[in-house]
Length: 580
Image 1 (cartoon, rainbow, N blue to C red):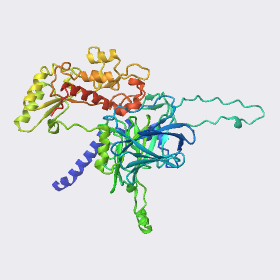
Image 2: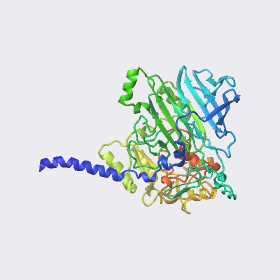
Image 3: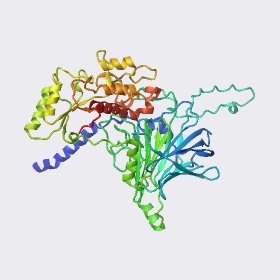
Image 4: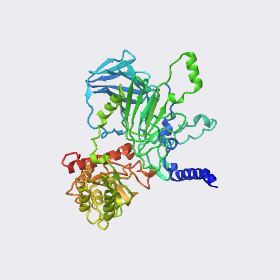
């Protein structure tokens, strides 16, 4: 009996663990697949082929630090403008936009730490040849633009490290007005009606408007997706495009599974070993091999899917034998195909050549994080939730009693008055300053949560200020957007408005957040943004931000802008000094 129990008990526990894991795993029905996302469904259909885009060499304009060229779609004849420049330190920057768009397309402006340091370029070739070469002054990197079909090869020294559009998969949906369906002409007596039928061009059903789980996306600008492939000839493996609960090396997705998705979402019960979207989206990818490492930073804040072609992972025994017998060592390099819903093609090429250099080039663009405060790398104590001031005091004392080091205690939303940020619930926390000082005297810190959703309450100063000053995100009709989050009915500060960021930063100053101190840390959360009753638990894509931009254009930047405002507030709170 005892022996039997020893056999069955582990099996029972394993079964229960599997069942538990299944019950707490993510509900995939709440989140789109590529097939359910119209632009991904449309643009992923493009197969490697001869590119539909050609360069018009007679349009070449050469400037001190960049060149301009017109591109033309060989079928629609629509014109685009390519701008290609070199940045100090082995970086190239190119942008492609419509030459005469129906309306302006969004360009990311706030992701870089500073304006790139562009350098002079030397230009060779033009109308008389098949290529145009742009060489960075004082460096070893160059870009070679092939005119027809269009592609750009990027070199570090003699090594080709990145090839843009080498597979010819570039797509660029031009902005256009929706045409009403023409009426079928009447048949004339004595003629066959078939000759007069109007041939209707079939479009994807989600091209002009889309629905998902009861949520409607009006798509006022219609289809505006774009895509481009990047090959890494020196690489064996691709890394990057976080955040995904997957292997470090990116997996082959073409023909096997969904592409990796970049779309900030509140997915805490995520699955392992797949490319579904999670909390963060960083559109940078690196290709590394024995001789060289290079990278691509796809500067786009819209929903993005990235298909990976990884030939190393697709090898089989037979192909290896064939190559061994034939003596052939040729193999396709890994490829990443970026597919975005809106915006423009805005790309930085990081030519390496080492992993350290490629990463340095990326951080030259986007910045490096300050060293964390010493207490931030020690033990932090956090749970949902500490009930009151006495609870905090007791937990802190227990760490002392048992001689366990602890540097920081975190408070979740229940410390606030009715889930209103920059306030305290004085019934539960009657003496917040005294509580904070008691922790500080023991060498400890307090961290409190402050999220971007704002409770819609007429007695709440923050809500009233945002309402009166027009600081909230709007819906498609221009009215204040109302969603649902921890406080219940909530609206969302529009951090793309510089005035809103300054107002938000002001709230951290001690003259405003009076029951706080310079030692209190801030925990920003829920800034995907998380909207409990929204599509995919986030904001409607046709909501409007400062400048009239749709949320679809800026989604993956919203959290960044929230943290930017907080960072500014905390720096000003400490009078420009970084805490140690």
